[in-house]
Amino acid sequence: MPKILRPLDVYKYLPQTNCGECGESSCMAFAAKLIERQVSVEKCTPLSEPKYGKKLKALLEVLRSPVKEVTIGIPPNAITIGGKDVMYRHELTWRHPTALMIDVHDEMEEEELIKRVKFVNDFSFIRIGRELKLDGIAVRCVSDDSKKFSTAVSTVLKHTQLPLVLCSYNPTVLEEALTIAGDKKPLIYAANKQNWKEMAELSSKYKCPLVVSAPGDLSLLKSLTVSIKKYYNLDDFVLDPGTFVDGGTILDTISMFSVLRYAAIEGEDSDVGYPLLGVPAAVWSLFDGNDDEKRLMESIVASSLMSRYADILILHSIDVWPILPVIVWRDCVYTDPRVPPSVKPGLYEIGKPNEMSPLLVTANFALTYYIVKDDVERNKIDAWLVVVDTEGTSVQSAVAGKKLTAENIYETMVSSGAMEKVQHKTVIIPGYAARLSGELEDLLKDWRVFVGPRDSADIKQFLEKIWKQEVFGEKQ
Ligand code: SF4
Image (cartoon, rainbow, N blue to C red; front, side, top):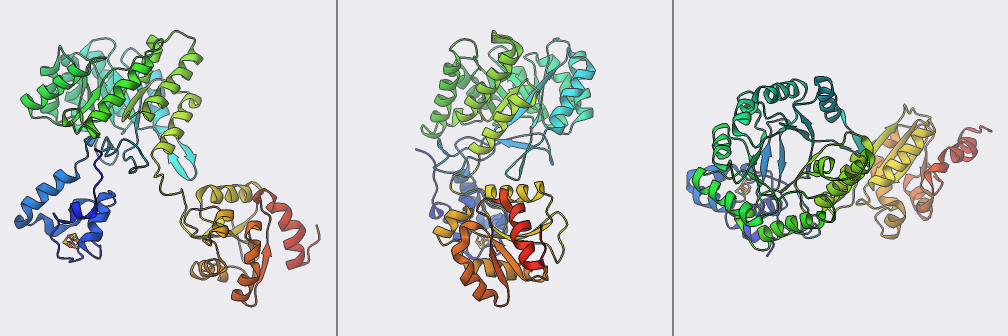
């Protein structure tokens, strides 16, 4: 069964004194936030007292996700993967978005290698106000030469602070690279049937997480993990069941990812309760097609594996177009389906508004906010924008559901200081909120309420043809 905790399951391990040191009003409120992963256990400072030692241990066990959290890299750029509690995101939000790592290898010209690292550092895509970034670099050893590989790792380290995956099946090659990169806590790729003892020793010596790899053989994958756990007392694993991309075998890959995740969460099999790694970059060596077909295929494989539980992916393409659908899909998969995307309510400045600039009102649904903002900016209008808390719903729905009312527009105008910003004493509400205009005018007393266009794309025309004319007597 998926591990869905209730506040009482957690509350029983807290001190139950309601002391408030965690910043919450009660232990029960803290328990509810712990379940939602909005706070960490350390916030309850009394729990670190020796007398609560047993409770703390039990609490950490209860809170441990069926898929263990594994951290790669060091602060402030460390990434955490895994930490999944449920199979389906409508049950509980999936935490720790799939890490996207771009590969480089030690046979690349230095210029090419640096170009790829810089691409990863600089990649940025803004979507509904969120910046979407790539997460790190996977350095592959192609040469099987320790010196070449270490040189490539050094070059990468000189140009990025992002987390690394060091990839080789040769423990000697990896050991030399770890002497220069081990303190950055890279993910070691990979222990397999032949090298697992040496790789486990490296993971133990350098305290780095370890990928266990057994392409196409889930029994072997599990038994290798169990052996390393047992003989080396390690627990920071990432599992690689193989990424098969030629012909119809991608279905087998998806199926193996699903079986592992199902076993971890529904079957409570802690031996496979670790993050899963996929390598869509394998398309470049295994898939028969031209470069654009490979880019397209890599993008499809990455998106499919992300939909089916991949916690970290190694990609090869550094063109924006194949990365874009993957990174946007990640953003969709990892947003909380119970909470609409929203922006903070309050007063926003667009351009350089002054006391004669228009004062506009909108809802705090992120999509609405960014559409209005973009339309105003695109038309080079300096304006004040009052964003009302409509619980993340659009204007039309918010008016119908009474989440956008004359009262909360008035309250936001007062609390945000919007009314002191303009001299003309006029406010423009969205066309879909027309029915609120009379009531709002009553609340605002000597102010005038204008009903603007339904579509903010028409805002320029509205301001020039109606608002400016009526307020300032300006004819266009
Ligand atoms: S600090 Fe701990 S004991 Fe105090 S209220 Fe918070 S959860 Fe309860």
